[in-house]
Length: 129
Image (tube, rainbow, N blue to C red; front, side, top):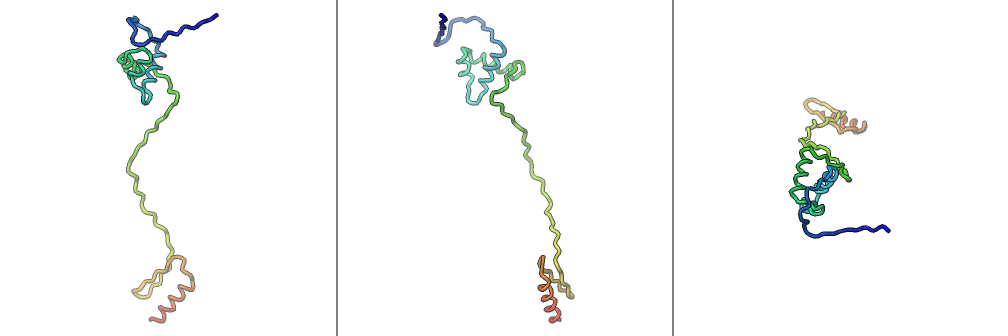
């Protein structure tokens, strides 16, 4: 018959001696402490560590001496450069307007003026001169 014994303790243990933590475990604990909303004290307490011990592991990670695992919910960031938009020159629409010039008077007709409109203006000008 196989039995499992689980011991739960509250408070701090007396002198445990120097525990050796594998780098993979250190990295996982540091990674957990870097999650949004997590605090060093909370994470350290869960693993029976002193907060300053976990802080020193975090320093090792920042220095590249402790390689952290890939995050489970990998988030990628892209650099964004915000600058003033380049002003584009106003586009000039090629307009083919009909112009009627009589002496010092120039009459510009709207785009797409019908032939009957142009004829009526020409007759009115001819009658006026």
